Amino acid sequence: MEGAFSREYRAATACCTAVTFPTGFAALAVRGLPATVLLRGLSSGTFFTLEAVRTRA
Image (cartoon, rainbow, N blue to C red):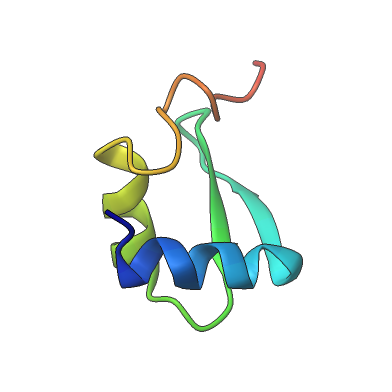
């Protein structure tokens, strides 16, 4: 089942930017989506695991 968030995410991938946090993890900041919703999606593994987006120290 595809949720509205995943459809919005795919539609917005052309205008996303990588954001690196002091913890060494990276997330995607997508225009038009609240950061909290995006981070919740990342944490729950909706799109990737945190391991997949971890930046090299």
